[in-house]
Image (cartoon, rainbow, N blue to C red; front, top):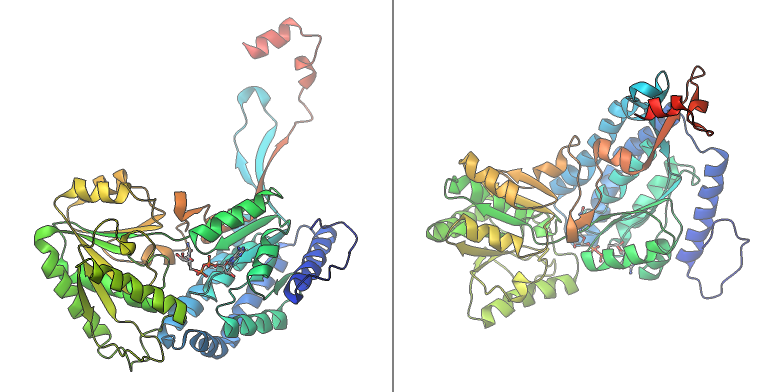
Length: 476
Ligand code: NAD
């Protein structure tokens, strides 16, 4: 869909696709007439994001809970509202520094010329967000894109229709749609979105869909940031405090019922510690969620399809004769799709639970003999989005960090590296391309333009032909 061509009605277009086309043309034209919003305008846009998030907090909590069946209220407050607002505030606090041109040195023989890197807005940014943290994963990249002076179109997931509608209303109540707007629709709208010639596209979702997104964007040479998934390991060193590690792993795996891109996917434990870690994780899970069927603190699985997929991973493991430890009650006719933490003990490497990203509260516990076996286990799989290491032996820790490649790492806990605005967040290899959060987000959505300012005193003609001895002297 070239931005400049005259509009031609297509009778096969869905409403979502038509709306996308209209908004994209509107934003592109607005960009042409105002390509460089001032610092003050950017701050005003960030304030709009904070206002819409805070003013609609209760709407968002209700909408997300309706979409999930039950979403723990505190999880929504912490992971959607607080994380989003603190990310926007971080951008506001640092924007003056980020927008400033970076002075870089110029070689002696070119002085007194100057060289600078000048951040410039890219234009119109597309953001495709998933269902698992539907507010944060739509608004955090939006904040970075607006801080960098861009216009933004957001396409949320069709699996969270209540939140998508609430987000669309909240965004339109604060923003001129030429600056920021939400486009809703199904997979066709998602596909049309990826074929739109955005100046940058940020996609958060699964690796298989990410590959399709990259292929579609490549047709326009639209640069992409891909925030994808994968199997993130939690490695327990023999020096670890088992109780603390177990509590942290149970929390990381049960938050949002394991539907977290950086949740620990599986645990690697020293063989002689395995039973101790299984019972410590069980104990921690019971303490945090004594009654999973009835507590509002435990989040539901998003849909029947996702629930059935998780059940079939466990059934497949049982069929193989693998031991399964289910923690807490589960009602077979559970209308809220609450799935208890289910540990799968030493499943075969080729079983389904070790082949695909789990994305739910099913946790393989794998015994390993030594550190090298743990390293081989991680390195023979795709590069994960996150890696967790537990222990007290700093040399062992550094060996594991140096010999594995993952998007990010938290040592002696789970998830927390994602919440640090001074750390870039992104995957590597199959878990993603590029990064955002904090300064990394600002740079992702900026053209970091190199500019060379020649001095009026310079005599560049010495390097023009016909070449003289002076040119040879400069070059020697
Ligand atoms: P998904 O890939 O199914 O969908 C993500 C988004 O893409 C949705 O908005 C969907 O409508 C859209 N979409 C689906 N098919 C499309 C297509 N062909 N073209 C364009 N858009 C399309 O992912 P999901 O099930 O919503 O989310 C779960 C996955 O996301 C997990 O793999 C998880 O690890 C990953 N994830 C990653 C991060 C991260 O920051 N790295 C964060 C959250 C989730």
